Picture 1 (cartoon, rainbow, N blue to C red):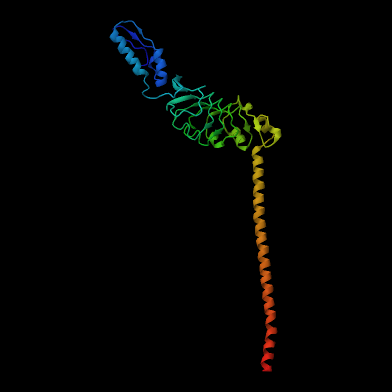
Picture 2: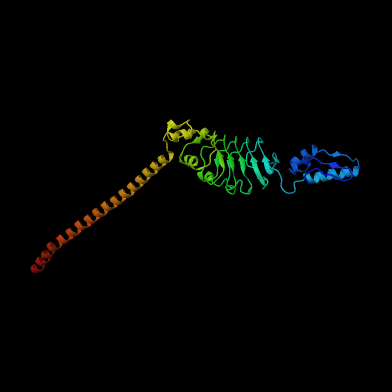
Length: 288
């Protein structure tokens, strides 16, 4: 049905572009550019074929988000929403989308389950946005099939490692104001990073001033280890906690010993007072 249609009597050719459902907003533009080459001038045939073209342009199976363009790339559904001033991820993305481009917008956050209903998704381009926060479950539901995820050129300072380490996708994380810490180091070690952009993952802030402005890979190659810093911090915290408990136990023992000593002293004094009181009672009875 998507190919040029031919009738035995008076061939009528429809361009293939007329037969691609693209959603209500795109359909009007599609119809405006949709032309029919008629070798027959029968009015009834022209009306019938125009009506048929209109039916094909109606989005029966899937709709396209406003301001986006739905097309095909290598036989797979692609949704193109680049440079549309979007502030959040569209809710009505077709379920059969494989390639999703959301670059050059104003998206600030990727919430949990943002793509969960898109089970066929293989590539996501979120570069050149204003993303600052990524939830732990942001990519739940697409982790197994996702092949490429571009988060470059955003405002990401830190990211839950659970959000990325579950992915099999090739990651692009360059040109973000990263705070170099253990979680980012673990992502660099365990995730599938794009080799062409890994050198552009730079420490915007870091626990030590000497690391600021340097590529994370260079810092690690020079012997830096942000996870060891965290381990030392945890060791110190554990030592302080154990010392506090030990001091409390010692204090309790000292108080217990002092209290028992005072009780024993008072008891001895009472015992010493008893013999002296008995002779006095005998003297009083003799005098009577």
